[in-house]
Amino acid sequence: MDFLTFIPTVTRPTRRLPLSKRLFWTAVVATVYILMTITPLYGIQHGQQQATQPGQQLLSIIFGTAYGTLAHLGIGPIVIAGILLEVFAFSGILNLDLNKREDRLKFTLLLKWTALGIATIEAIAYVLGGQFGPVTPVGGALIIAQLLLATVIIILLDDLMSKGWGIGSAISLIIFLGVTRQLFLSLFSWDVAVDDQDQPHVVGLIPALAAAIYDFITRGDATQLIGLINRGVVLKGQTSLTYLPDFVGLISTILFLYVLLYLEMMKVNIPVTAGQYRGIKFTIPLRFVYVSVLPIIFTTYSLLLVGQLLLPFYNPEPGTGNPVVNTIIHVIFLPHRFFHDIPALVLHYLIYVALAIAFAWVWVQLAGLSAEDQAKQFARSQLHIPGFRQSEKIFAKILERPINALTIISGFIAGSFAALGNILGVWGTGAGLILLVEIGLQYYALVMREQIMEMYPGLKQVIGR
Image (cartoon, rainbow, N blue to C red; front, side, top):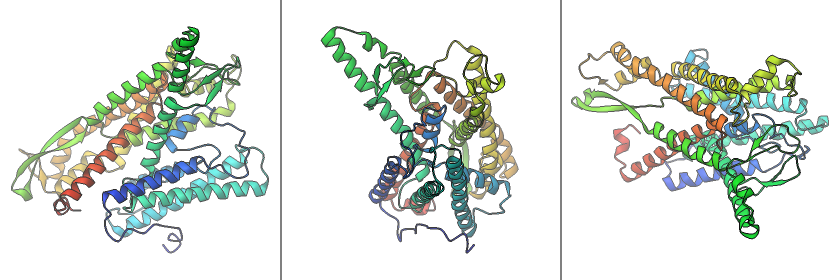
């Protein structure tokens, strides 16, 4: 335990901070991370561009990475460490009772050290794998040290948020920032992409639309304006189509966001009565999308990991390379709007849906969300379902059917939207939009909760805060 405490930490505030100050510190955390994404690592060749690798954009959105900067590893190490330790804790391998304060402290310290260990392995692998180009031993050690320092900063940012200085967690905030940044750049980026014919294309849809309208007014040429409907170009140095932000992507993104928001707001109500309040009747709402964030992170990361491992053996030239590897890479990193290969589209969709359902089921069983776990919480709160005897086994039997159904449905929805988002080429990817909506609603609920607590301080005693 003494060894585990040998790591920087953030102390809790002496008293509960008002909402305005917590919002201020949340903004500080966001600003620090944005600065990290634009601060280049010292000692690397910044002329390289890794973002063109398949799946790199999706990985950067989920883990908030930015190539060649202090955010090169992003939140990947702490997210992976958290998932591993939570699985170990809930499965009993760690032998920690997270209801006890001392065990929660041990879990937090283990999480920090595990994240640093994963960051060390990743940093060494990147340097030895040549991702930063040829470097000297001293230069490689310097890059590793910078990446470890950046991981410590992210750990402290998350510590700052979770200790009550900010709202929510730094991990959720960084994921939210990554997706919104991608949406913002798709709309307003002034960057210029050059195609294989040496023709420039403004990346952002709004600047491109302004240029197309100007061209139409001054020269009467509507070619660029019509081309903004579906903007597929072959960028210089590439062989496949890349879809720059266009109106098809904009409409698809808006439609996806609307449907996701609608589904996330749906609830399934379980009627209960409270014994300690003279049998007062009310309902406990279960979210229709019962669990979506972690299953889709598991699914996306698993497929990206398989794809990255097989990528060195992939040869895009027809009739060359291992056909099995080529097929797997093609299905995982399916080009956007690749509608003429129906088998690949179906496989891509089925793989995402199957993995999302499987991970949703496993996570519900391990993370304390199963019918048995919910029944235990009902029993501790002295709640019971009208018409049934107050018993954990009876609660579990009644809750088993709706929770199992909601688990499968939520996995199906998450996998479907992630796959369809990849196929249609929505901005921020389908998985990114799921995370954006889920985290956005969580922050909305947290802010509303804090406002109500400030308006009615007496509620803190009623809900046990």
